[in-house]
Image 1 (cartoon, helix red, strand yellow):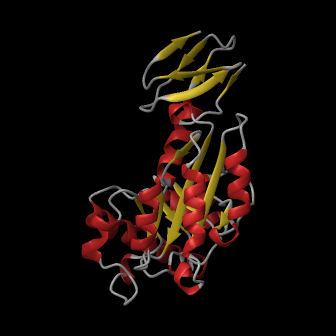
Image 2 (cartoon, helix red, strand yellow):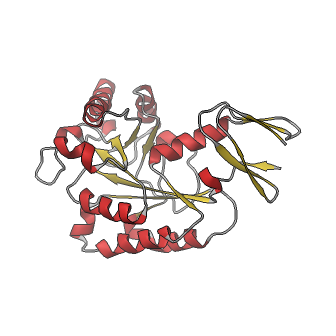
Image 3 (cartoon, one colour):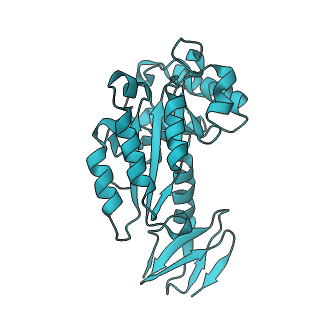
Length: 262
């Protein structure tokens, strides 16, 4: 039986971090992430970058160079309170400015002020957004049913117990740990030691792939596009990413654009 339950390099599990608002405390958080080899996605409001506690526009590219920059709305507006054209403007204008600042295409987002109804997700998709995170924590280590309504595993305030559970898992099920929050909360709660402990625990796991939100999206999307013959003897990968999978106890890789005969 062929199972798509592996991540790049044949890793059994994946972990990703997601932080909102672009507060100056992101700088300290990124230093911790970089120290432990953790990858994060940072959701920014391009219209609020000149507030006192925000990272300024001219520093965005340098501060986030090792991580992903994603949208969070120009003015952090609650999207379901806006008319449809206002939703479009809030998303597209944020994308436009963040792309100008980073020189990269912005494909992801998180919803300002939490969960939004499905029609907002549809509008986001029509604005070129390929995934968007909510604040509805599931407590689960599973992949999202809908990437445009991507519910995280937990907020960082409640992450330590489930991180330990995740770290101890040894079987192949493609588990995903998704932690979200606001870096400024570590200042207000005086608990920077929490994220240091979590990153230290995760970095010790040799079977975890650390990725940004968009890297998770791209890999899962690629794995779902791989074609398999009825007799499980031919595996065809039409994507531009290598994809790992298992057959019994064996871990195999079908390289980008290639066909594997088993």
